[in-house]
Image (cartoon, rainbow, N blue to C red; front, top):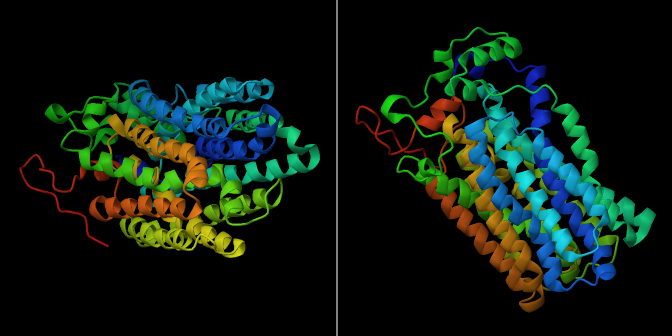
Length: 463
């Protein structure tokens, strides 16, 4: 990537763009978490069965699987800016429509569409942000997008608590409609956000790219500068091609990004969606306040754990952070699995420890896929990784209440520990180090792959 972008001073433009791009993650965290609180009132009023509750909880995640796979490809083909506001309009419409639902199928359909729109935002916003960021700030600002996710989750439980206290369980309709407020806010923030100069340069719009860099960074560049490091000639990659992701050159990276993401979020989403039920299984008083506040506390700890991880990925590196985080995350889950009758306060403490340790993989969810793939398939890679992760999250969210009923809390926690152990194995084998490396250089340096001269690039250093 052009040194004008890699070495640009961090400015107000970057801060505003990072805020604008955080809208998707924040809405995702809010939308997926607020339904857990809304179900408290929704279940008795609509007479929902356990299967219906599971379906409602998993619907948005299933939509994210479709949205990530489809819109990641479109983002690489037609540009980052085109759908930057359209997905927020869809979220706004679905949220408002949720206020009037009376049937389970309507709730499921709306949340499926919400999930598709949220997943569309990830490849759009994170690839756009990555392609504007200076190298020294790339890890931190991409990692901060997940902080927006947890901020949205915490906000959902705060709003849920306030609504329950003021309006009782009947306020669930207002909770389902409340994401509309965030949609309007981020639509205003995103006004005037520019297209990616790297995408423009690669797609025959070099003059526009050069002008955008001059306007927003105050730097003079050429089209050749912006294309430096991009595959060319016989190596040129098909834009937005899933086939490229599974080529010999990128297959390992594709599997790594999808699998570590899946192993991290499957237990996480199930925990946040059905947190009150999990805490109730450990003996925390159920109802409308204690279990909601307990789940809100866990969400807050998920958020807090991201801050030291953000610093660590820039001081210690991406690879050691993800490997050691997965290793330590296994401990509290295994503890709760072995001791399912642990006192409620101890169980809450263990779940908070797990939430804190999740910070490492959390801040790398979108950092790794954006850094490991070139401009031509960057959004496609982000969308694919998001889709794979949501398969696990949707299955986990659907099965968790059934597992709590059929197997009990102990085996459920052991299953979560086993999935986390798989994330450790994938990271130990395939995680690479991209700290301090230019964006296009990181995407081009394939460990073990042959260079154009027939030489082999070195394998990443092990933690």
